[in-house]
Length: 341
Image (cartoon, rainbow, N blue to C red; front, side):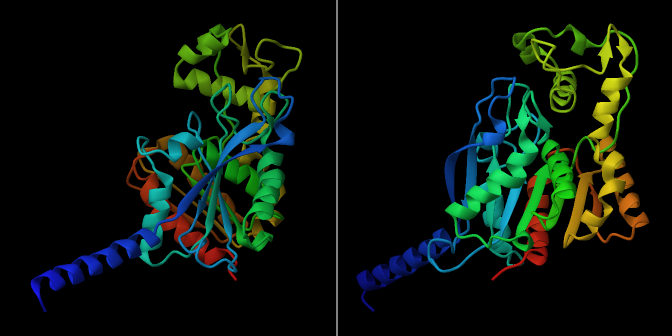
């Protein structure tokens, strides 16, 4: 072969190789979805939510094929923009592409709604302050995705996963709406256990404006945000919520509301629903001590009822292994548990 032809042949082969590699990456669509269940919230947050949709590599090529859907929920202070950027601690489309390249993951659609609110997170709960996020995720979002994309529009083909606050949301919604989702994966889920509070003058009582909220520490923001989700009070401006303390004294009625929203407090009433799921899995890093302790309790609770599940404490903290866990554990889990064509 002449040198020039050899070079052309080489570049042609390389071009085919690069084209094949490019074909193995999914595409992302960003849509603005208006949630009726989020309208009129007392925080003034927009009911129009940025929603990212990851379409697997084969979606565009095979126009007759339908896919299961995994709904992925992000954590407190996070957003869709962060999870789908190159600058954050996770870039979800890259994680999904790598998972497919492993060979033990099947193609699915992955959807993430933006749950960042005035208080930096919705906790995927039902509240007059932040909106009815539980209904949005369990009803409106799947209905819209099923109408717009080539999904397999049935429970057996829907999975629910989330990290931290999103893991809490996946547990909450998965347990309450097992008629919509069939498999659940919790990544370092927060807020599973009821929590108490001590007396004193906690810093969250000092926060009176949204500007002060923005300057507050993570723990103070978390207390106020969970109060917005679980202890709304339409007659208590400017935040329209009740805090777990007042003048430094614990408020039993408010603490009872917060406790009622802890999955480990209501799990006993959802056993039949959990048993109907095709799969439940959860994990956390060993350095994420309080969350690791909580999922050990969840593990024992499910064992007590004879509910099969996957559970692991791995070496890591709250975020440093989550991308790898999605790639190597969560997506293969959904490949095994969801219904495909």
